[in-house]
Amino acid sequence: MSQYRPVYISRRVEFSAAHRYHNPEWSSEKNRAVFGACNSPFGHGHNYELEVTVAGDIDPDTGMVLNLRDIDAILQKEIVQRLDHRHLNEELPEWRERNPTTENLVVDIWNRVEPHLAHPNARLHRVRLYESPTLYSEYYGERASDS
Amino acid sequence: MNALVSTTKVYRFCAGHRLFRADWSDERNWETFGPCGYPESHGHNYTLEVTVRGVPDASTGWVVPPNSLDHAVEEHVMERFDHRHLNTRLKLEYGAVPTTEVLVKELWDILVDTIAPPAKLYRLKVAETAKNTFEYWGTPLGSRSS
Image (cartoon, rainbow over all chains, first blue to last red; front, side, top):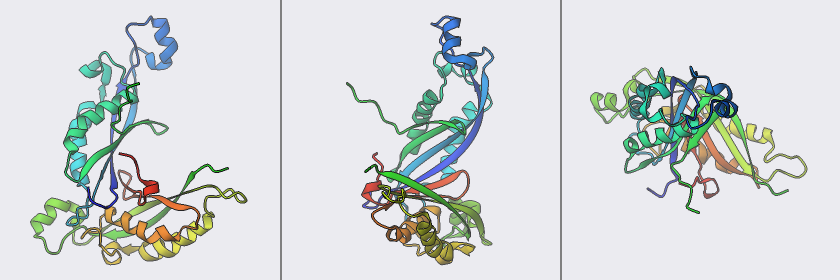
């Protein structure tokens, strides 16, 4: 990148989805104790908000880092169309055997979106997923170092 | 106490702009900027978050006196941009088009030296809409690790 500090641009999209927290290796008592109401067999829903942040240099010709319209199109195609109005555990193979917590979802979203945002002068910086207005997880693509 | 604390104040202003290049064809402008290039222009209710960072003053407890920040933003941002047309008010030195990327960097240049020391300007965040936001950490103190 150039000598300039990057500008961080963010786009938000929304989707609504149902999920359930359950570990099939545990007894129903333990599931209930750990996950509480989130263990209800019918699931429950959220209006998720997904915010994706890209860092990069301003293209002097357009004034833009990347075109937010293009970022929106990627998010709609890769994420919203896949998850919106779905029951995540019931309908998506990646969530049959793993809890679609906000933490697990945000990493999965990063992995789906990041290849589409590779650009000489910009990179995916952060994915933030709001399960509700008061609870979100964010991921910067980092891995815990080996101990 | 020498804890380093960030404090953010949120300001709002309304401004118009048009994203287009006079030296491009209509087709190229439409392909790049879409409705953001309509010739009549359009506008936004911008939100500006100004984050300052420093050790809270021992006698006041503030990183900076809030009204000193208000005066700086009023004089240097509101007077210049509120209810104005950005195409005529921005220097456009970081990009040829008055996007919010260009706006946030110019706002940094305008505000960085107006913060009462020893605190420093740490981050600016401009929301063009609820879905489009732009952040800038302009100095090494404020750089995010990648």
